[in-house]
Amino acid sequence: MKIKFLGAAETVTGSKYLLESNSGQKIMIDCGLFQGTKNNREKNWAPLKVNPAELTDILLTHAHIDHSGYLPKLPLMALEDSFTPLTQQKHWRIFY
Image 1 (cartoon, rainbow, N blue to C red):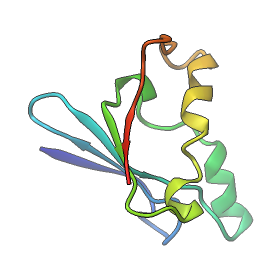
Image 2 (cartoon, one colour):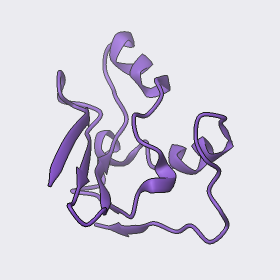
Image 3 (cartoon, rainbow, N blue to C red):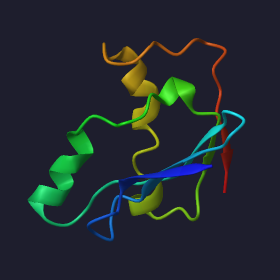
């Protein structure tokens, strides 16, 4: 099992973690926005270091914006050239 810190590693905001199981599951734990200083907020426009189409599940620890506010952006990333487009059949299981 592997864990990647995609946010909240150098600050307390923008919580995002990727948990990868040995069986191939990719679970995003939290999906938060960075808040606070302009430098922190600008991180919300940086490319995400994981392809949303590869996520199998999303787990939200709680619904504060710094843990869930980035969630609406995931489907929009399908329109960007950097990721494989999501199909209409792609659905994430979101646990809260």
